[in-house]
Image (cartoon, rainbow, N blue to C red; front, side, top):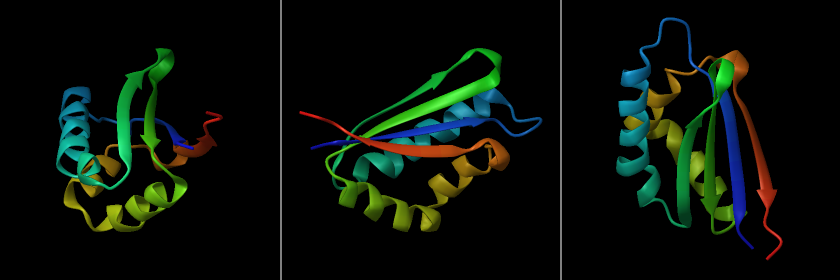
Length: 97
């Protein structure tokens, strides 16, 4: 069964949205899509300044492995710097099929 990882957040104060989107694309293409088990990832903007990233992993072990090495990756670290840390939540859901 696949795992859906749902990240919600707001951008940090004074963050340029265009620069954030560039950093998001870089992290996605240069780090995340190179991780074992990553099936799909999408970023969405909500009303009122909230953002959502849904990542589909082949397994919880794949998601865990990526989370372990992400802090060492410069593109992931750069992306994290754009987020308001007090607003970040991550939840995982297991698919039923």
